[in-house]
Image 1: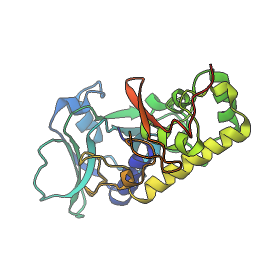
Image 2: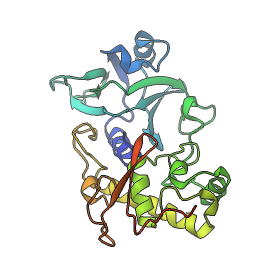
Image 3: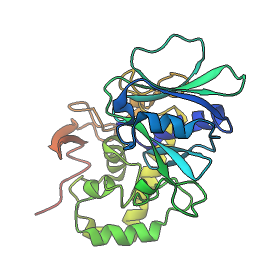
Length: 286
């Protein structure tokens, strides 16, 4: 599942290639691609025709395109969704689900491609008065740590109140958005924190250190286009990211810890896996 850096890479591409263009036609080629738009495919296509696309926006792992009339197109990439800007004469992808054409002569169109059809696009009203056109269905999602408006103090206080464990808290998108399994493991390794560390034990300096590592690892991933383990995550030009080559924890079971040399371990965790160093990230005492 794409996390903040991967979604931000896509957002930047859409900002460059789609902003300010007016939709000429929308072709929905698979109904599952708009299943979150409860009014159906015809309504989705009809309401978008003639709409002008604003600046691409993101909150955490959620991406949207504000359009005129107080609406926003929310993109859910799922596990294999791709938003691609392609030449109009490029062959259709095998798993092309939705096509946007525009009323200009730029020669490109926007395509939503999704092999597994877990993702999709939907049209929503924006939160009244929100300057970014935030879709109302994600109004509960917290700001992410790269957002200038993210409140470190409020996060620390909320973290302490949750009375949970640190990795569960990091994946709670109503507390802090954008962090998924990969970057949680990376930030915890950098912080020398075990994933089951109780949040009630965090001091302000410890929380600040953790947030610093979250920001550092995400910024480093952004610099190289995000993390791509296969061909399913790409930017709008179909290019993969390279941060998987720099991962210190995630996916490194039995490989030596880059800090102390101890073999990294993997443990099942909430239908996922947690990767950690048993020496650098000691589990909390009972």
